[in-house]
Image (cartoon, rainbow, N blue to C red; front, side, top):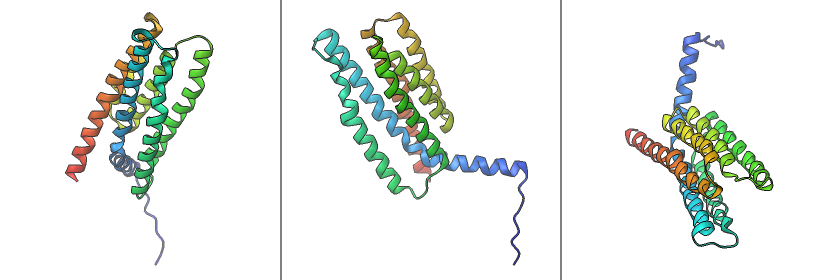
Amino acid sequence: MENEEKTLTPQESLRVIRETIDIAKHSFRENGFHFLLWGWLVVIASITHYYLWKIQPVERPDIAWIVMVVVGVPVALLYEWRRNKSERTQNVLHSWYGLIWLGFGISMAISIPIAIRGGLSPVPFILILVGFATFMSGVLLRFRPLIFGAAVIWAGALWCLFLSPPQHLLLQAATAVLGYLIPGYLLNAQSRRHVQRT
């Protein structure tokens, strides 16, 4: 038997690429979990930090952010470990998505100490980075609520220009609700509908 490879037309190639991306997208939709996890943690930490700073003052109100490390990191890593164990194949969309958020994490680890060392509130810088990573996630997943969520987060970063640093925390909580939690719940609902259809 001869080994013959069929040459695809440009239209067929585009169709194959689109189908591959759609398969990857649908297998990856369940990742709304991370938007819900981190969204709730940001809301809780932001409000707690504000409370410990302005309402019931303590020496280190920023201790509220320890919840991100103590709860967020282990839960996210455990979730990803379980998900990777259950997935049969790794797709390119998942890899790109992971690289975007890895770049986000590295950028955060650099920008927060720089802002604090310069005597600036880190919140606007965090919101700019979160907005970018959320926007790219929305583009990759072709999920408009995430793109709108990114726009809200970026608008929040701009709004910080007119607010005091304590107010930045309340704004950050609000942008987490509008930019992370609402899209996260919509993403989760969409993935559940997709699972019920299959």
